[in-house]
Amino acid sequence: MSPVRQVQVTFDCVDPARVARFWCEVLGYELQGDTACVDPAGVGPRLYFQRVPEGKVVKNRVHLDVRVGTGLVGDERLAALEAECARLEALGAVRGRLLLADEENESCQNMQDIEGNEFCVD
Figure (spheres, rainbow, N blue to C red):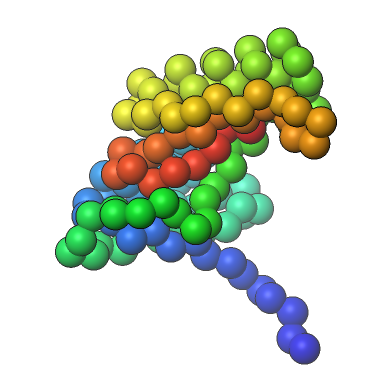
């Protein structure tokens, strides 16, 4: 079996340039052309945004996690999530449900990007 050399995450969207700019701001990536985002450190996957004629209809089967609370628990984690969510809302993201910690998982915040694609801040 040959090793995987690269992974690209592709988004279907109505306005690829707009969604690409949004995700570059979210992740600190750089715009590559009008429709792709790349990690300036070369560590994270390339994101590509392709135009499709239809809008989003159902829940994503795959989503991104924006990881800002790694290693944090309780109130400290919730404060980190809150700060990041406020920043993302200013970019046009919309909050969904806050999932509080339980016996298996730490707290995370469901959100949607500017075209309604779900992602989590965790």
